[in-house]
Length: 427
Ligand SMILES: Cc1cc2nc3c(=O)[nH]c(=O)nc-3n(C[C@H](O)[C@H](O)[C@H](O)COP(=O)(O)OP(=O)(O)OC[C@H]3O[C@@H](n4cnc5c(N)ncnc54)[C@H](O)[C@@H]3O)c2cc1C
Image (cartoon, rainbow, N blue to C red; front, side, top):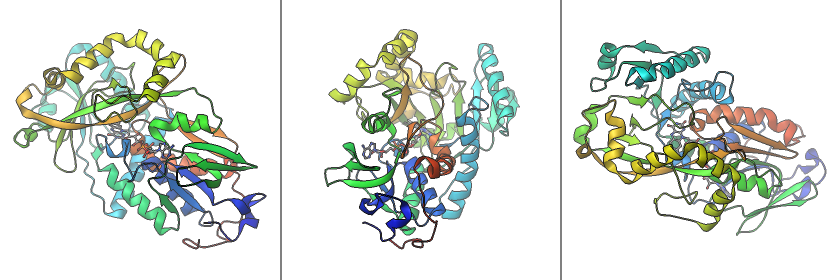
């Protein structure tokens, strides 16, 4: 794996397997590796993941919505990178022949009490440069005939895609450009050898000059292993889905969302058409005992201990215990689950749904008990860690990748003449 032009890369490089190793073959890590390798074909780049396939965690278990940028606080990273990321995502999918559909989204206020929050979303949409239409009940029915409410925002550019398919295409791009995608290789520790980092894996060490952490639900653990701060900590929130039975999918044309609780970074239980034709109901948001709690009963002692020992968890629980109880009710009762969406699609009944699946949100919680709303990037000499990349990070992945690549030259100290050593694939 060692290259032949290490003299271009400064002291110590002779012993490095890679110039940059990205930990995490989700959509963010793969997009980042592709961007780095595209900009700097001379760099030896690898993506390493403990799972046996790409997109094994959040990237393969989500609503599949290309968000337009309706929700996010103007000026935030989420606002900027979502709008830019959606533009890049549609373009990339068109280039790679990955199906997308701009099915449009309604965010529905079911009664007058929700109008101030809808007004705020309208303000944010305008500030973020998002195309939208404020609609009343009549127009709402034209867009979604089975939906009721007093007013809604319609976002025509919100669309759908299979993010796992995008991740597979990105992995192919990385490989085609000469990078490595190493699966089934969990990083269990991070050591140092001079300026280099030594990533410990069960198959042996990987020696790298630069490290980019895109580890999703394990982002905090990787950052701490690399000498970073324990704050913020990832607390796993399970998002369960039900599926509409085929005979009920006609209740939804595109995407129907409630007005979200402004105190939480979650969007509320929504109805989403998937590119496969399925219509999903969900996701819930239940704090769980494992970072891979795809089955609701899975508890891992280490994960549960990390959540319970974190002061932020208890501060969060004190603020949101009522919401927590409501989430638990939705998680255990299909009737309560369906009722949350029947507020805006009243014809929906429990007979219309069947079993679905679940994803686990990697949500950062700060020591002081805040659900960290914005994306968080942590830079240290030779490493850049993506510490909080929940929704809409799948939409934003290509823009996040560009941001990380912009910073990489400085942070990862990537000296050397681009393209001087090898062309693409010339490893
Ligand atoms: C229920 C749900 C619904 C969502 N809906 C949407 C949506 O509609 N639209 C949207 O834009 N976003 C959505 N999101 C968010 C989106 O899925 C994530 O923001 C995005 O997938 C994050 O990608 P990632 O690459 O950072 O993380 P992941 O896809 O989780 O990838 C992280 C990878 O790191 C690997 N890893 C971790 N630690 C190590 C280690 N030590 N060694 C090796 N490998 C390691 C893991 O195996 C994993 O494959 C949703 C998320 C959930 C959970």
